[in-house]
View 1 (tube, rainbow, N blue to C red):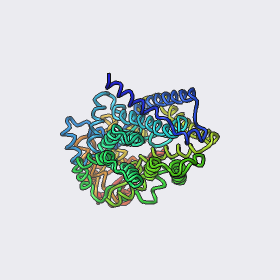
View 2 (cartoon, rainbow, N blue to C red; view 1 turned 180 degrees about the vertical axis):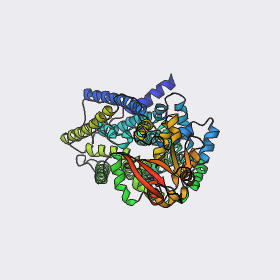
View 3 (spheres, one colour; view 1 turned 30 degrees about the vertical axis):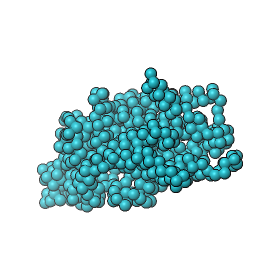
View 4 (tube, rainbow, N blue to C red; view 1 turned 45 degrees about the vertical axis):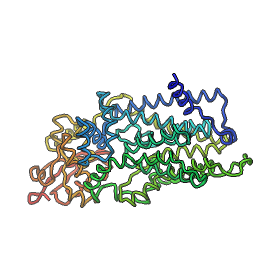
Length: 538
């Protein structure tokens, strides 16, 4: 009974922390009890909708290349075999992620749903944690708007229904924020450490998401001269999985070497586009969102309230929490600088935790605004999310999985050259086609590899190195370019437009083939007839 009461009180403390009066009430956002119950009801409705929508998206969306890597690794018969596959550099995530996916796959027969279920549930956790975090400072109304704002980000539109670790990583970081807000409680200090350990066990780059917490705690140390050893221990514990799994990461880096495709494609000029991508828009809008988020945190946390003259200075807790949010908003910049130091790769998703920081920071800005401004913001968010969701249900009204291979097979057969072998120019496009193809079409579709040519034309040989490993675990029709073109002087080449940027083959064929003639062209794909020269296959 005592354990039950303790758990109940902890749960109530998690959800029912009161907002600070100098924020919610001063801006006019303090709500009557009936309105608070209404918003809590809306949160429940939002959670239910996200579950239903997530399952619908998971059931109707084919697995793409990276998710097939997840399926391949997590489907290994034993944990020892799983570790061995990762030791060969098959994929670049820590073992903890595949263990979670392995458990999920054992629960459901439908692999599309099973693999993506952890991401769906993790996004629900993120929603709840953001609501709880913002509610403590700004009240239920602002908290709900910040939570709903996440539905307009790439975190919901893509990663919440993807069999990759990003959604789960976001849930861990969101929970860590709630834990840090409730320090110095010993219980929440322990929970902070656990959440960071789990985050690092899911994704190697989670270590960069720990940096904002370290900066915030450094501010506490400088302002109060108090070394909170428990908090520092919790932050240090977050790096333990990285130390344990370091041999796997070292093998991955050694195998793909200096030509790993994520090393050269991301530069400092890519940072504004990252912020834009988080909100499914362009770099100009992304830069504006970044500026507004920074201003919101500074105005809400780091400046004195003009309506609160009794406070002679900004509270230490506010400065620490504000530092945490500012660093989280700036996480793409922090991550980019650190990966350059360690010579690592970078992409938008590696600093995805910034989405949570921005959502909370915009809540800070709203807490300073008057009700009409809040109402306009709510109208904007509800409208943008509503339009996207309406389009989603229109496109998925049948709730059936549309095999990408079926459409390509019909496309090929209608060309009049359906008896010829079909080469898919992009490996990223080929892998899901091979996975979903009928037995007959599978035998007809190929991917041609040549590491030297891929490196020459694209500056990377990453996929050809990956496919060498992948074909040992997944049925694939992968052939060496020279051998295939020697045996097949005439074949079809299939490409999707716009391409994914990893299809060197059309460019090379334009130099070495006798002719490359388009036979079927649609807005998003092209089928060409290739005739090789008799005297050379190179």
